[in-house]
Image (cartoon, rainbow, N blue to C red; front, side, top):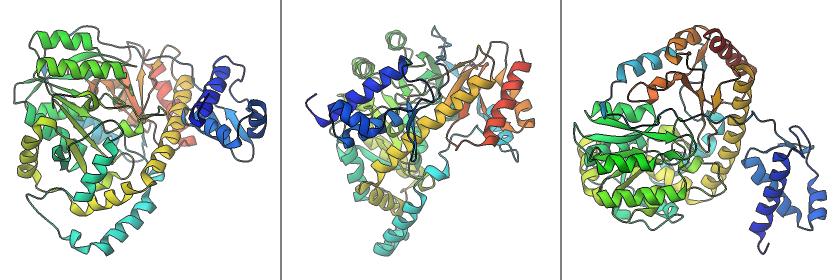
Length: 473
């Protein structure tokens, strides 16, 4: 191994293989840092890097003054793909049902495992308070700056451009700053399609994306989606050749609710198909920074040579949802998206653009991401352990590669929507699987938010939910 990076990755992989082989069982203490350094004839700092990498992967837990221990993990039971064949495009009709479920989830004193927001304690709230104060003192004019045409703050554009250098060259002229990633996606759909057009989506996909398609009077075509690798490109190609699709809307990095990441080879192929058929892709990359691999996965945008990919994102999941600042890398649709943005809502807050730019300029954001990824890996593993312990043995769980939600497949006879009312009465909120499909599939699935710190109250809630599932059999 010729470099320092290779050394620590090699050690992490070697120890990980020993864990997989049960040489070190769950709960076992790994050899001390000093012992590993002496045994492998490497530096203590290299060993510490390897152990931190294993911690990020969810393989070990660090215990102060005690060392590193192999963490307990639920048995791996991949959540199976539900859809195997293309169905006809269909108008979406989930808005009324979704509003009912969201209202029920706000019932007082329920354990909130439904809404997928990052918890306050892992967001950099104090650091943001200091940044907000500093920007307000330095540039008080930003507190009153409003413009219908000047919608972007220069330093924010520079920071977005700089971060995109990790995966490619970005033309700052194609950046449109928006009020959240949600607005970015809605603007892009309006720019690339019209009412009655068909949008190819993953199956399952985030219910807010379905809401947008419904509100715009468009149809959805569900593409069979593998719970580990994402949408079937063979199925998509068939739909494209048949002229069934006018645009795509995918979440290639940490799909919500599956948590899957599309392999790089698939992203390259997808970009090629988009170019061949001249079909735009609205790419939701809001969870890209919260993927758990050692290197952040590239977006499909990195492989786009035709300007057909419109990448939408924000920093709300890792810094603060309250800023409501998103952006689009709009490719050849930049002018259309910018015009729609101006007409729809005018400028996005220049003040909060400047605040985020200050936060992104130093090392704070990268430190925050590392902390969040490590924490979320551990919390997903803890939730998986609890579901495996309390739910029926034939339930299957997703293996999220990013984000903070868990997708649970229950036995076929369990109706997640019918069970929801009973769960609310028992003080537990979740999202039924039917809300993640344009055609009402995934009736025996549910999504759980794993972002909250583990407490006895959450443990008890999973126990009650598991009992309800067993009673439904």
